[in-house]
Image 1 (tube, rainbow, N blue to C red):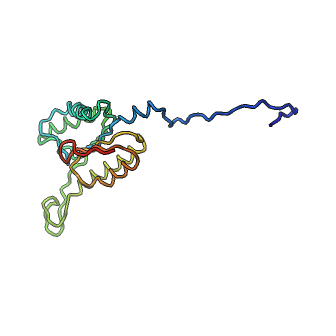
Image 2: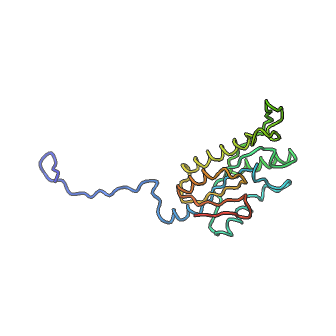
Image 3: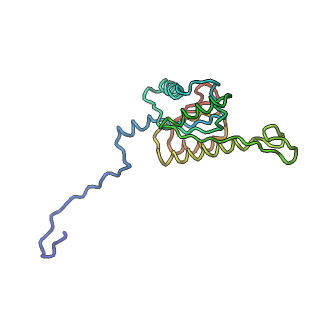
Length: 196
């Protein structure tokens, strides 16, 4: 028993640990687990020309709610070449502006570059010496980085919806699944894969 300076004993006090700010109660965890974070590679999962961009996230939300009515889009990261959004340049620019006005959306315009092969003098997409244009690798790198940032800013439990036809996201998706994210993947067919 501790004593005061004058020799009188101190009263016994129980100290209870304060809950940490990051410790969520059960209800908050349950609500948080219904958040969906969308990663969209519009170069490899394009929308039809002339599509009404204002309805895009509403339709994605409706599709998610067919799986679970409580699923809600929380954030969206979209990346690709601006002019891959639509054949008409003005329509592509207006679609991009709609994306940028949405508070949930973080966009990355990755312009295509005409790169010429020194050996055959052809641009990379048409050259047989090169498997792919580096534009796709740049888009993939940006979206993979954003998945890592998502892991820090919005830790699981929650859902990750990847919209892409690119198969190279397997490593990033495996990492996110190992951290506790539930994966939803669009781009291989109709709401193609869902895993816990």
